[in-house]
Image 1 (cartoon, rainbow, N blue to C red):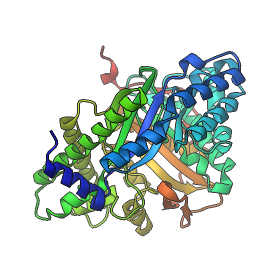
Image 2 (cartoon, rainbow, N blue to C red; image 1 turned 180 degrees about the vertical axis):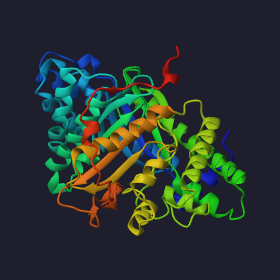
Image 3 (cartoon, rainbow, N blue to C red; image 1 turned 90 degrees about the horizontal axis):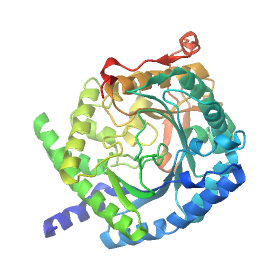
Length: 451
């Protein structure tokens, strides 16, 4: 039974503290749609997505009105597309356009799953698929892509890492009229998870059911507000405040997820309670860390504060639901968080500090704009470093960098909407091509050898 006080608390969270359901994401298996030709496969995928997801926007809007909680994005994730395209190498963009058309027909904001899993090896068909990603992102509007290049069990596929440096660079170049927006819809993972509802890295894992509803809850403003009223709290007390707040946020997400799944005839999957920021004032993960006592995110102590936040969010969430999953922690995308944007502008944070923070946060170096002339091997080096952190620490890490064409350090790029804006950040000028060019595989750590 939900008490009157809990109802009033939730209303207050929505009204003053930016509580929202960031996304209701429907995962759809497309394995049954694979055929020998690109055109037939694309047609079947389009039909299945439109059949399963035709009411996701309508249902989400109905639930938003009933419960008074804003649902910001409605999304679809599909089976990693590289599993469907082996029979028609070189024609992968036919499928990409069909997926984008299906997203538009259903009215969803994004469709994720133009993805490949090559963490241990890469077939010629998968290589062909990955090489199609830049053209696919340039030719579509709502399609998102991801590639998993490593895992704690298999190590890091350095051939894939080297290739992805080139792919990121080309994705940005082909969308240079939009400041490299294609690269903003492409994520390179280590330890990618199958039930992530957040873009651009969402895909419907092969271990998932036919149709699944996953919900992503966002509440950095709620956590910030809770800490604002406790200036005298000790570190232990801060942790307790965050846990209790995450508990309440997760309860709201689980309610929406179950209702949506029932109305859409799908399984209820998970609630991902990641604190996902926006460029709006009052909705920043960076400001939570500063509320703990940092002058600016990036100051010494930032990584410790982020570790505290991430751990407390997870503990509070699992108390509220047995179906917490996805990434569930705290995102630190530079362009999408007003506090991170400000810290980058004043030089309080750089890419090296971001890398350190990713050892304890949800994902990794996310939505970082870099100079358009950054060498592709340097991008591969950034990917390799992040993958190593994920592999050794048995956690998900990722890279989403945008080498903005014709921009240099000191410039600013504005993507608009939830993608925000960002200063062009400096990367190391020292060459790593000799290392990246070696190829091969970094073997998994010894703790992976257990069954």
